[in-house]
Length: 57
Image (tube, rainbow, N blue to C red; front, side):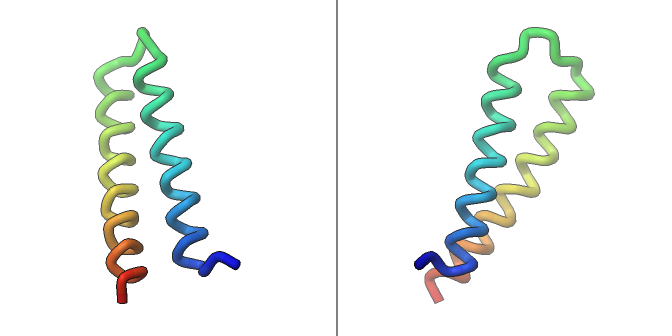
């Protein structure tokens, strides 16, 4: 059975993949949309890093 940290990591990895696929698959993104997705990716990366650190402890 997965721990809650592992489940959260799975969720955030899936969200990260969604954003990457969306940005890479769209040819009509505005600069604002790219920035918004970049900001969301930054937040996800911080959360992923924090969870990976917590998982090690």
